[in-house]
Amino acid sequence: MRPQAGQALTGTVRRRPRPDFAAVRAEFRLPVEFPPAVLAEAARAAAVRPGAGPDRVDATHLPLVTIDPPGAKDLDQALGVQHLGDGFRVHYAIADLGAVVEPHGAIDAEVRRRGQTAYLPDGSVPLHPPVLSEGVSSLLPDGPRAAVLWRIDLDARGELTAVHVERAMVRSQARLDYAGVQADVDSGDPQRLHPALAGLPELGPLRRELAVRRGAIELELPEQEVHPDGNGGWTVRVRRRCDVEIWNAEISLLTGMAAARMMLDAGIGLLRTLPAPDPDAVAALRDIAGDLGVDWPEGAAPAAVLAALPLDTPYALALRRTATLLLRGAGYAAFDAAPGAPGGGVAPPGDPGHGGLGAPYAHVTAPLRRLVDRFGAELCLTLSAGADVPGWLRAALPTLPDIMATSDALIGKVERACVDRTEATLLADRVGEHLEVVVLRPDPGEVYLVDPPVLARCSGPLRVGELARARLVEADPTTGRVAFSAEPGVAEPGPETASGISPAS
Image (tube, rainbow, N blue to C red; front, side, top):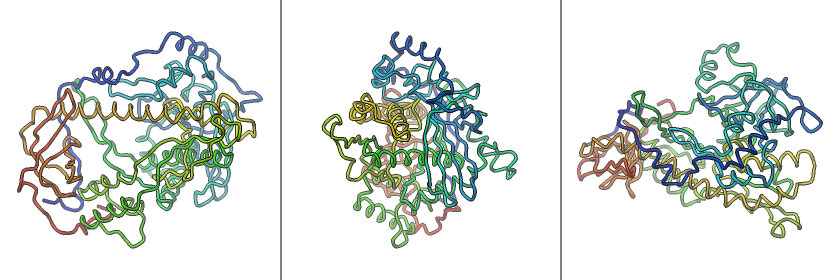
């Protein structure tokens, strides 16, 4: 059976015993602590706070704020968005890890081993010692901090016109969260919005519109997160991004695209790459859209079709899940065209773009949590100053893609294991029940249970985009495996079309 076009896929969650996250740490051999030499070097670095000077401008007067989830301590970015004539000026301060991590030192070696921070529900396994990542290097609002400061000018359409990056001392004026800033925006009272964000409600939507025009693919799939259930256990919830979080992400992407352009112009860099969507995958997506009754105008790109979908209907959910086929092959591409570069010189990739963003892109905005961003920031600082790229940085670039590929794979497995085992714990006492699920894929079968929000395998006859009754046949908290079976005749076909879908649903 099908729900009404506007029926939302939301619900409450049950509370069950605690999943074993310690077992996840052990299974994936996550480091328990930092070696003594790393902690000692971090303590020394934390004791020497950089200040303004010839190599670091004083920008403590700039209105900047951080916007992060409540409770976050590793604050990578501080943001300021102002109107400038009929355009905008963005100041984006990024934690300056280059100020505290010595090339080839103990910290440098350890973070190359870790790659990035692993976030588990009961605590993180940080990339850097907390005295740095949650202390002197975090852009907390308790004093001046060293930062890599980006100044980005944009015209009235939100298009980039100028960019500059330099080392600076900055001071965050407030530690904000997404829900609070969204409430300020929704109030309609400009006096409630922090002055540092005066231009964000206008620039954010402009950048999002430009992203769709570029062909940027935003899936907007339900993002499962594990949270305390308030009763000593854990539960899975779906996190929806509010407008402010989307706008903030657009500023980060803008900075990464500016960094990529600097690197490509200089012939040296490290890009985050993703092949353009395969034509066969686009054709398959269009066929699925037709089966679901979703309108696909002639000549429309996948980005435009996906952007027009509602969030909470079975048809939209199924089509968004199918669209993941467009985003395959992500990686990193290091290049250095100089004849004397390590390896004899490597030209930029023939296709330097990121197929999910519609533009070349580089990671530079989250150095507290991701290794590669520190090196990207150091390179952009060098290029912006017109200086020679130091040898240690040139030598590091070709080593980073393999490090990050290994790290990305590990973190993906850790995050999935935490969600899977929580899902299985929530459902362990419901094995044998028939539950209503949304069919995301018929072969291999994949379904989405709304309450609690669970993605799982499902055997049996299935039709994509349908609501079906399926029997829960397995929920193993130890392995995290959850499986359903749709028995013949249980899934009921619905109307042939879904013409009632609209962005207003």
